[in-house]
Image (cartoon, rainbow, N blue to C red; front, side, top):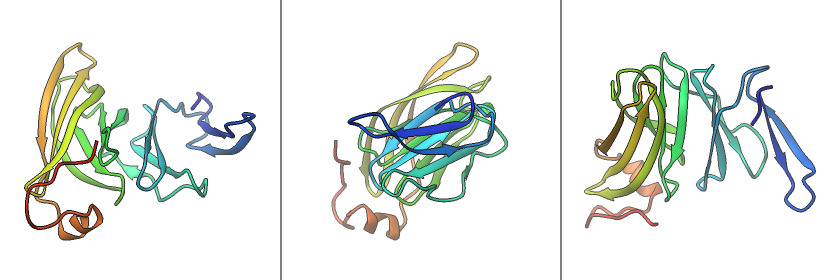
Length: 174
């Protein structure tokens, strides 16, 4: 990412540019996260209330940008198992997304008093058909908080995508 609003994908062996994605003209790209399913790159900018999702196989934008509410996204982070993406912003909310379905799963409102500036996922698992996520967040005011977030029960379509049975609790792969 760069301050000009472009993301440049380079070939590994010789660093030849494969493609250039423009998030928005002259809008700085601040944060990037790679997800495995589908193989994609998620990007945010502190001057936009959208999350852009790019397909790393076809090198095309996967969908219309995802809406982060009324606020600019300040941070984005993915879980180690690539099943969850968290975003935080000036609106003080922590949003979590499913990369496979590319949709928002939940919003934790007002987790800080001065915006969510950074986040780190320290653990994620699926228990009783719900995501349980352990995360740290930091605010622009210098405060730090630890969260254990629990989603509503995952719908059957998502459970099928994730290979979850209706039986025993399931732990996400590392």
